[in-house]
Image 1: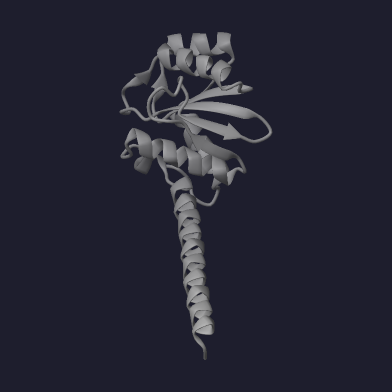
Image 2 (image 1 turned 90 degrees about the vertical axis):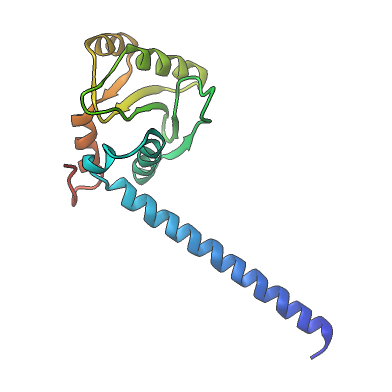
Length: 164
């Protein structure tokens, strides 16, 4: 075997192992996203805000959307942008069980809908909404998913495991 053949084989082996590593990482990421999408409310209540956003992305990815997380600051009121038949902006509010989401969340996501040129805007929480948030959401056509609706949504996506 000459030097060129040896060098070519080494390069092929390196390329093969890098491709194998990428494939394994992609499979592991998909498996982790599927497990995360089937999490119940008990797990959601223990998540921090960022993990809740990742959870929602996994859930919507399972439904065929292409979710994209916005930057942490200066996100113009949206945490997640869903690309599908429609562009949907989402604000995720992972609160303590007794804390209610107020109307500022509705104001922010309504502004984000205009900024991101989205057709719909949603606020999703593991808690409840104030009456002011409900009134403004109705006036602005913003969809609110409270704890109960989120549970139902999770169960709809993953019917073999129910949220608790």
